[in-house]
Amino acid sequence: MGCFEENNHPGKAPNTIYVDDDGIADYTSIQDAIDAAPDNYTIFVYSGVYEENIFINKNITLIGEDPKTTIINASHFGNVIHITKKGRATIQGFTLCNSGNSGYPRYNAGVKVESNGNNITGNIMKNNRCGIYADSSSHNNFSFNIFSNNSDYGIFLHGRSDHNIIYHNVFIHNTCALRIKTCMFVTVHMNVFLKNDKGMYFCCGARENIAHHNTFINNSIWNADDLVGENQWDDGEEGNYWSDYTGVDENNDGIGDTPYSFTTHGEDRYPLMSPPVVYEEELEG
Image (cartoon, rainbow, N blue to C red; front, side, top):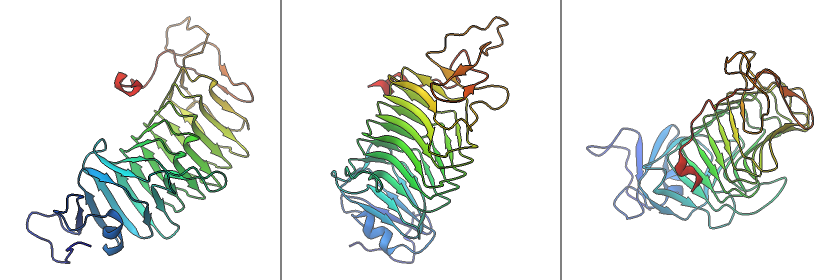
């Protein structure tokens, strides 16, 4: 337990609680800080390794000092962070790792999301069952994250998790980078899918979703697939980059002259001839 007070100390941001595992802040435990925080407070976490399972059941902002050095480790049990139906959060600046291995229908994840309107951005999610598992959770923003070495999915959207935005993430070395099931109006834009077993796919009633300006490189089983066929793989003018596209661009407009077709249903009508997003080589390590 820490020494949090309603009156802010000099040099501290207003409505902010500080956590440091070295014992020099308001709390040493992230969960203790969340439990003490009023709604709409910010919890700032200094670099360190926090071996916790975090439950969020209120509106908070959770900020890590540096995503490479501010680590929440679930030690292979449960979810790293669970945003319950009563919670709503912005989560930024963490490595979230080593969730439990529980399977369907209650996937353990780096972040399990059960509410609407969350913002998960600028994190590293690795060595989990899922990086993010969203269940009946809509109007969320998942952006600028790195998902690596997650044993089932980088992101799994399930149970009418509609109107979500998946933007500018990197998925590398996951069993499957992204699965979208029974969801509508999801936008998948400017992401990199690199060296996963499977890239991304829509299934099981997922329709009226759109994926465009993504980069798919060397995903070993397939780069992407559409098991439904009622989704759009371009924005009406430009589509995605596919490392296994074999078409040509006779007029040199940067768009392939023939569609990129999926194994099951659907096609990218305007495949790009070069990647729209340049990934950093260090991500391959």
